[in-house]
Image (cartoon, rainbow, N blue to C red; front, side, top):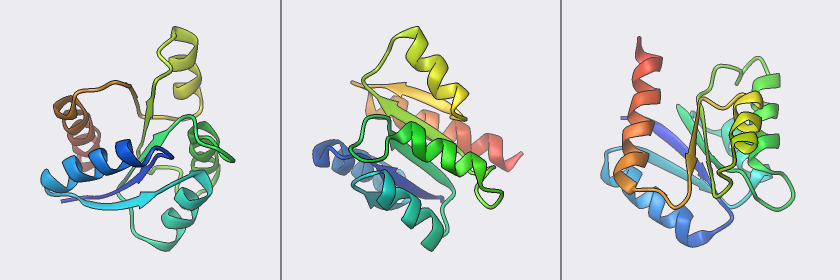
Length: 124
C-alpha cells in the first residue's frame, strides 16, 4: 500500500500506530523525534507523514512547516496526532499545513480510516 512515516516521542504510541498501520498493509518508518522525521523523509520514499505535535527539540508543527517550505515535500500529506484538542490548537495545526488532525486518545480504526482517506484524496 503506502509508505507511512510515524514520528512520536512516546514509544508506546509509536509502536501502537506502527503496528496498526502495518496490520492495515502499509510500510512503516518510525522516528522518535522531529529531526529524525525530517531525516527519514529525505532518505526514504514516504507517501504520508504522521506527526506528534509535542516532541522534544523539533515539534510536529515545526516539521510540518519545514515540509511545506520545501518544494520537494510541499505536497506530502501530513496528519498531526496530538493530545491538544482546543479549537486554537486545531487551527494552528491546519495553519502549519496539516491535512488532518487527530486528537489523542484516538481509536485505531479512526486512525486507519483517516490515513486511508488522506491517501485516497492523493490518488484522485
